[in-house]
Length: 306
Ligand code: DON
Image (tube, rainbow, N blue to C red; front, side, top):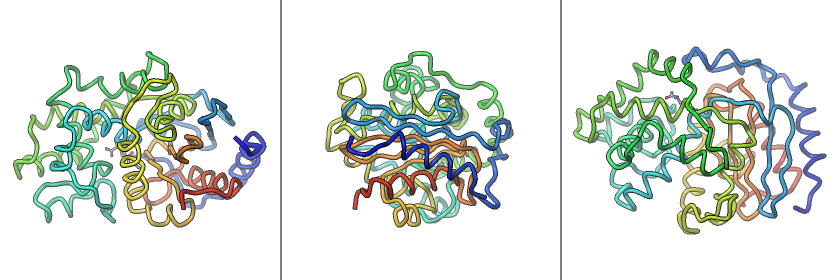
């Protein structure tokens, strides 16, 4: 790692502590997510040379939410291979992550695996093939980051379940088109549980490391093949930040995946994985301080994927 990442992280943390992020606020449509203090901030970089740099509350758990969709996609890809792409497409949606509009217009086939519709369909594919679909994403994350204790936060899960009407509507709409294989309740339970996994920024940066390291995880074992890694990074670049993806590519320019818990993972292929966490979200459901932090990091090192 050829830059002074420790100094860069300090500058970033100092900056985001003073920037006024205007209207940014925590997700409250899942009430359990609004309990986190507004000013929490963590950033962790895992270099492909084995170095790790952290700042802030790097060891405090947060709700990974939609970041889980990337890991669920890897599991579904392992089980179904390229047939997966008959169930979900690979195009950015240009609409909100929980929108139903395109799903109705496009006969129940989700635009991509990272909007809620696509992730629910991916959870359906996992439900068909894995013995314990409610725990498979948490277990996979535990293996990837080297902490077998990674768990679903039950309070968040119950909150998601109780406020899950919109996700159920999405699942029923797909079911009505004959595009969901398992019962809606089984699928949304697996989906809510994967979103409710709690992890620290350090664990999340480690779990994402294989995407920066040609498919090889922090333990040196192959997670997926290098060409699969490229494809997942491409999908994150084009679909990982929802309808903010164009702006994010313009200002930051790396594959990334966000969640409404305020976490974002980012990948600089060949160099490092990064996880940033700060709970206040912009209008598109992405961490406002997290986006600024990634923008500052990429500017400081002068290297995006472009
Ligand atoms: O289903 C939901 O709405 C949440 N469990 C996940 C949404 C999410 O994280 C979108 N991210 N920006």
